[in-house]
Length: 474
Image: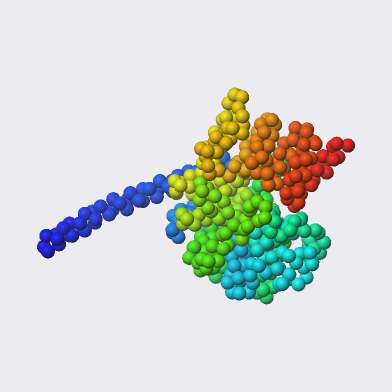
């Protein structure tokens, strides 16, 4: 017994002596990760001329990284800080989605409910549209994006007079009308203020609100985007109150950090509801959204979130217990904010290191080698080496890169490959049509714009280009 006791004491002493070294080792790893994230953010901000950013990373429900960099107001040289408030643009939709699932849990509504059961003034032709179709952007309803400068009464009258684009549930078509109706639904069910209902998801002392460019909101950052000549200018995005379901919420970085914790702890909605909210909607044709969220896959690992205005992004990686928040207030060079959050999360977890840049580099190297190569063969060989890439977006991006270089032949070849790979993508056909139009091949451009419009009747760009082509052919 005495001998055993001595061994136990010795073991405790060894652990006690080694513990500081273990803690220091963990701290050094964490410090190196923080430095890597900070270095990347600063380089990205410099390369893209991003004016200011507030960034957070949450791991296992603990805040492991938080930083404020840059300027909130260039004219007055106000720095980004913990008091800075950001407009979230379309990222606002995820809070509406959670609000809808809260009403579902309360038994007030159901995903299978026709919206006409709750909103009595809808046109009869909208009777087949269900709440699930609104959340998943599969309603087929006409988009009221162009009605935002009008009153709600006028906008309602105009949108009611337009045709449904496709049968509800058939396909995904991102549409602001869906979340306008969810706004109305919440007002009807709660018999109260939409804004008050949504902001109740946050702490009582938070400054979360809905705001417009014309509103005076203390500490709200100024937004900046490039003008037609590429110069950085103040960006004023106006949105009426009746569109606040689709866009309009304003908050600080800390507000979303706290909200993320509530979501992870299931204090906003249950785990069962969250699982349903994150499940992909089953469209008849193609894929798209979950029930109000954008689902993406990075190296085979699912993430959920949304971005807004090309400025802000929020992504959750449930299987890794990681959340990334990226708030920015402007840029001179347009970019994909998902690429930024993917790079950040890759600094924290090797499984989430984005292989997309390596794939792009390898494919462009093959194309630019000067050798006679079969693009499809090179592409499919690289797909085997880089299995976790969003190929549709990447092919489109590389195609436009060659378009900007006036290398129209390679651009068209990439767009044609994209159409072959993704025959149900309206955007792929739209890009190919643009390539043919740039090359002066108007008939081929027309054929592909028509196909793009067939796949997505809400594609206003395709409709405008078809009119333009007809004028030029005369």
